[in-house]
Length: 349
Image (tube, one colour):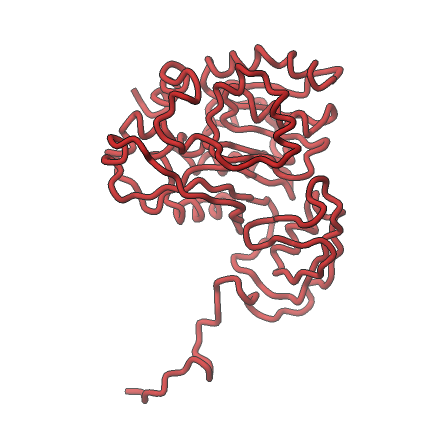
């Protein structure tokens, strides 16, 4: 049985509910905001009982958006996002497990009635995530793509990232949670059906992920949240040895011409506090928590991520690209040459 069939078997036949998981890798432990918790009460119990996510994949400003959920499973994230997208939005779920899709499709009409929509705004497709081009999905037609603890289960992760980039429109984003390792894992671990099915041994080494994302076209990946994962099952822990795992949410924004580093053009933004449920501050990523009303200096990439996306109406923008001041201070990359402050006092040879 190859890895793809192995995953289908594990999620279609072995796991009958989230209580069957042996680790917390495929569980969401983050506390959801109050408005999300309220919407979760409207999810059908059979759908939520077969949920295997590792994060909260609900970015801001979804009203009217066209959204794609990769590895949608029984449909919990699809139905939650469909409530936020509204009747004029659309959420498409893609999954390769027939048993999961059966549950999702069975409850589409139930959620439509629950939300008071005159027509369904959800659709579920059966397919493999590394073969998105084989599905009836128009390139450049999605505002947002999400995925919740699924990329690690796909053998060809490069194909998934490239497919997502192709499907997003300019200014769109891939907002997703997944599991990452602190090192490259052995082929023997990847062949373990339990560790792979539990979202661990298929996890990418974090630096390999960053390079793959950049190769796919996402020049400046942004980490939003992260947390360490625990493996409490002694048998599985013994197999993994000293490898450490993390659940992380990334925001990958599709914009041509983003630079490889944070460059300083003397620009700044001011958040208007107008995004619903984020009146006091807006979090673009872990390093950009922008307080309402405060002028916030940003690099060129961040300026564009706000100016050329759905976030633009909610910010005032200062500056342009006419002057360049080098690497943006505090971005983790500094001048590679010695200055008067860093020169050694020893003589040359």
